[in-house]
Image 1: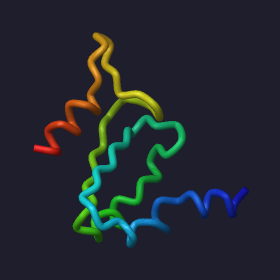
Image 2: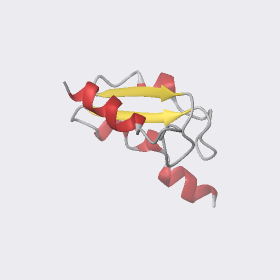
Image 3: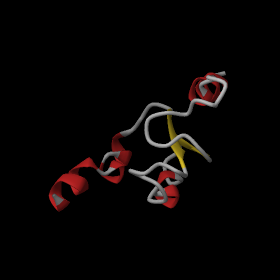
Length: 78
């Protein structure tokens, strides 16, 4: 299992990212949670990282049904 998590870790792929890339994570994500490698991500000029307070692992939809991720992505692309 440890080998699987090591293989799946984003840190192993960061040097290969050449295109502008946006990572969106949430503080309340039960999978990644507080394990986001902020310092490592900051080393790469093509990588941008946004941390949102709420959203869990698979959704950043507000109580009124609005999707936060779509808005953030649209603003980042401009």
